[in-house]
Amino acid sequence: MVYEPQEDSYLLLKHVKKLAYGKVIDIGTGSGIVAEGAAKNPGVKKVYAVDIDEEAISQLRKKKIDKVKAFKSNLFASVSEKFDVIIFNPPYLPSEEKDEDVALDGGRQGYELINKFLKQAKNHLIAGGFILMVFSNRTGKEKVDESIKAEGYDYELLEKKSLAFFEELYAYKVLLSGRRSSALNH
Image (cartoon, rainbow, N blue to C red; front, side):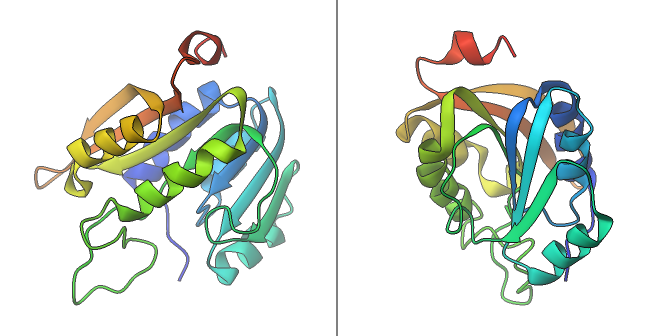
């Protein structure tokens, strides 16, 4: 089942519209709303939209969006190129016995998939490029922050949004350590 856009998608989209440029990849594109938003940015040349869900890719391809190429991939498994901007709206909720929705399940604690992504993403960033990602406090913000640092990245909190039931969303700009000045100029 294709992940329908929620508050997290719209929060990420807001920052993608402002900051995306060059060659972009949307990892876990779901409905494709963020990839579509990136493609509308005049500074974006090409958008690759990938998802593990064949149905999501099929629906996105049917839209025939200029500048967007959609294909199936589990994170970067089918990706060999490097990008200026990597977009990631991961499944970030902790696994629950009753909920086996791959679009929501971020692993036992919620941050495992983000950790895996961060390990792989650095091999796909062009020098000066950055990651735009969103996640929830239910994921374990401290664990995500630790993973970012452990993998050699710095981050900037772009926005924090409070939701019902004490949930907060975080939109981050993540870049390899030592590249802050060049990446923040875009």
